[in-house]
Length: 79
Figure 1 (cartoon, rainbow, N blue to C red):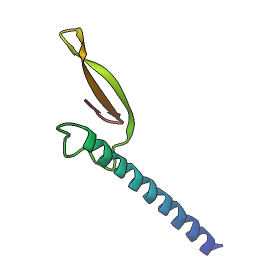
Figure 2: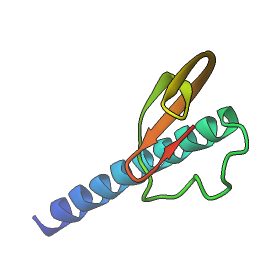
Figure 3: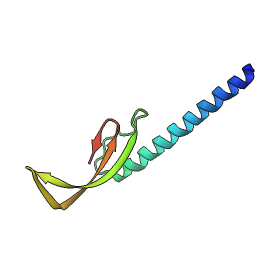
Figure 4: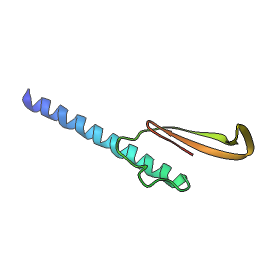
């Protein structure tokens, strides 16, 4: 019984490590897409949520000729 519990714990740890590795890899891919990306973008606590296209605004006026891409994370928005 005890060995079985330890194997389950080890499997759960391996799944967690694999997910963290995938998340980090995704952050590095996103970092390459962002101009002047902050070097601290890749942090283990940071989770990518979505990417969206938008337009730049200036003084409340939308400039439809200046498209920007926003990257939404659990703790920051980068554009």
